[in-house]
Image 1 (cartoon, one colour):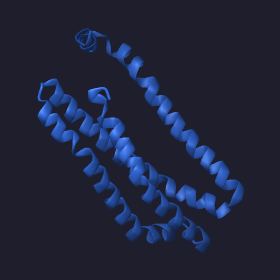
Image 2: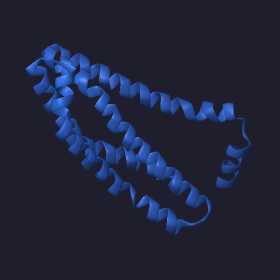
Image 3: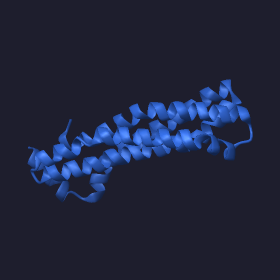
Length: 163
């Protein structure tokens, strides 16, 4: 049964495959966009400077997510290729690199944020209140990104094994 599904992917039209794969990705992006809209609406009700800080930090959050998902997809690709060749031991070795890479990315982003965030905030706004909000908001984002990036990497690299 698994062989039939695998052969179907190789013989189906690309447009049919895209119609099967695209909706979940589009839904995930829609949910992410709605999360940011709701977040902005909620923060905007309580603090104008907080909303400004959130809009300054948003691109940095997207960058963290992109690196985490990219790492997970890259590991997924390598693991799937090795499993396709029947080399489970090498696939397990690559899969074992996901958690250390997620931790390394978190440390890298935390260091970059700590060192450059005040400068980034100052070139983005003149308000001291907004600068303080940016540092606090992005600092908490960098700290919570360890959880998010490890989950994102984990979701992406577990797919070739069906787990």
